[in-house]
Image 1 (cartoon, rainbow, N blue to C red):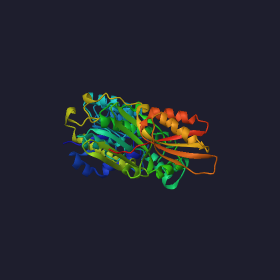
Image 2 (image 1 turned 45 degrees about the vertical axis):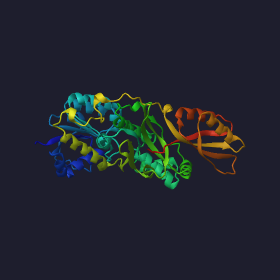
Image 3 (image 1 turned 180 degrees about the horizontal axis):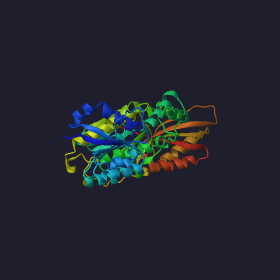
Image 4 (image 1 turned 120 degrees about the vertical axis):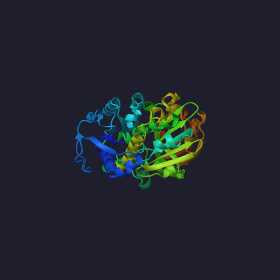
Length: 433
């Protein structure tokens, strides 16, 4: 059989890793795919010193790759939303299969892209878009196909996890660790996507669609960042038997699908609580298998390239299969996608960690507990720190309650004259069956 020819668009970190893995492991990859895979053309703005592209056909025009009649598979590694969308749609229109590592592209434009691919009878593979080198998409879409997925929770942004780990282990402030993350290249100069949960929400949107068979709905994902978390909050959580992690959580409920990213207290003895540094992990709960954990590097040149090349191999293996006999893009056949709604965050339920600063005066705590009781919020634990100051930190752990009721209670508590400043609120998840 003739070789399958690929074109790489973007020769940055992931593009360079993909080039090197494809060339270094060419023989092993062809044995697995059943056909030789060759790089026909590369589109790049500048040379990558880690890649020897001498003798290769190169261009600065990514659309030249998308329209090249010799190319079978276009590998999109340029990132971003609009130009990447135009590139992928052009490739599909020209009958090319597509492999991408672009989570933002899939989360925002995936429904449109998959519909176009279905019409043109081509595949769009995107394993590398979530959790780098961890094959979580293949696990949910294929390995867990017998299960009804109940929920999944993931540490799916390495930058945020690095920051939370450093704050816990060394008692450092958020701003200090963020600066180090930028110096180390883990965080961008503008870290908003990482620390405010947007990057994780892109990935969670994809995982939620795969788990529950719903269209991609990034605009309905709730996001909350970690910039307000203090070392004191992390210490208090430890005293209560919890760790603070920046989690993406999606859950099937009777009312609809929860889709949320936020700081979360989870029990210290849960495996997910012990995923540290820049590593990623996803915990999936299925009705037949129970809980399974997928752990590994969520970024990096060759870790992500591992997933990109695996997608290329999958595409090559199925080139002769008709579209109805391929693994569907979102795990379920397009005609079988569910219309289950994504719930507003006000309708989701969690337990809560609350930290407030109160004037040291008799009766203040009674006012607070009365307000919580009126909203039907039960208290699991209270820590009141002894101090010689005129104000005292009070930490509470509540039982599960609808977010709307908790928000109402917080507004009333913050209005009390003896409560100082804003109440810090962190959701608590047991991650139990």
